[in-house]
Length: 113
Length: 209
Image (cartoon, rainbow over all chains, first blue to last red; front, side, top):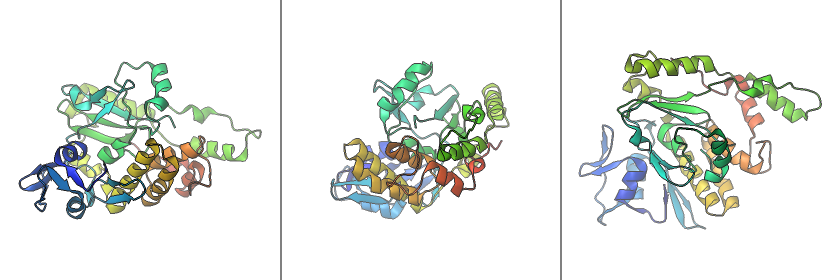
């Protein structure tokens, strides 16, 4: 995820990465990783995430922004529950794959290139 | 999965007039979330929202490239690229039969994997792969916010860190050259990188029931 600051609003972090921040730490699937208490309420520190979850940080000084990568050290899928995927259609209307719950879904990735 | 966003995808979608949703993943989030590293690749999701397969090559017909006649009037690089492309192996009959079997039998289908198998078969993500994702995303961000030249070093780094990710490479190459040929911007090209893995026959993983 792209950040302007290393302090990330918790809501945004959870929505974008699928990790949930609970009293016991950052949790995804069956895995929970303790995080140090952050001083600013409602925010999480990207440096702590980088250290504890192996999420690399890339910094672009010229444009004053950061990219926080996904967690590392394990497999991409921590569980078989499909992660939340919501993407826009041609008209910019967001569509959540989870809205198809109750039906079998085949999602095919393609590209123009 | 297209950095060009809706503008790049529009003519394909409008011509195909699909009855299913067609969504635009300009940031290539499916790489990070599901391990999609080339196209076409698919995931199958059951009625409860659980993945039963993830990351299969989803070819539903033989590529028309298979039937292109290679002749001497073509430039050498085009001839060579076509030769490699014609070696690419897919099995559309098996893929479609498997899909129909799952559609009919659900969890009883021999092609439906258990949750444990889905997790085990998902791609490993050591630190270089996570760092490749961060670099690719930074490049995407800079490209889409009007700084295409500034994207290049990040994309080069993503290619170096995760060479098996063809979407990272093909996306960036196609911006420098629509034919994904050699440029002075990137180390590799489609032809060069396919040859580096031993040829087109190694381009896609085989469908494993």
